[in-house]
Amino acid sequence: MGLGEWTWSTYVPRVDETRLPGEPPREYVVRLARAKVRAAGEVASQQYYVVGADTAVADADLVFGKPPDAAAAVRMLQQLRGHAHQVHTGIAVLDPASGRLLSDVCTTDVPMREYDDGEIDEYVRSGDPFDKAGAYAIQHAGFRPVQGLHGCYASVMGLPLCHLLRLLTRLEVEPQSDLPSRCQTHLKYTCPVSSAILRGEQAG
Image (cartoon, rainbow, N blue to C red; front, side, top):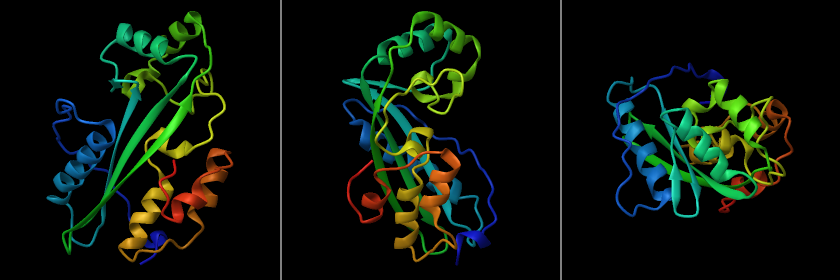
């Protein structure tokens, strides 16, 4: 089956997103992605594949989820500015018909620019940070917090498409178009790691 023949729908499963004590960020996001597809698979038709993802922003030993309020968003953005952190996105795909569940993880180094406190305050007032891990969106046209990225842009947004393609290929599902090229065209970003990812390397 080709991806162009699919009908897409969205389902938000109820999953406990509490991080386990000492759980590494990469293992944490993969565990949640797998839990999400299992929960969604319980209500999905067996004719549909189920895709789930989860993203965490990690800076040294700190893991940032979505900020609960403005003060937390400000603290996160102040902590992240001026240096690189890591974004870990776990992704899982379930074939409900066979019960086969595959997962992968993309880790991207994200260099943040030296934005000032005034820029932080203006961005937080926009309301955009509150549903974002780490309190920022890489694609935000006004804030533009990231500078000099050399990894997977789509993963920082929350869905690493080359990793998804890699999993779907293992399930013998092939796209009808060049997904990496379409991703780069849509994001206006020349990706330096897509070929390595599709070769099976641990790149991101």
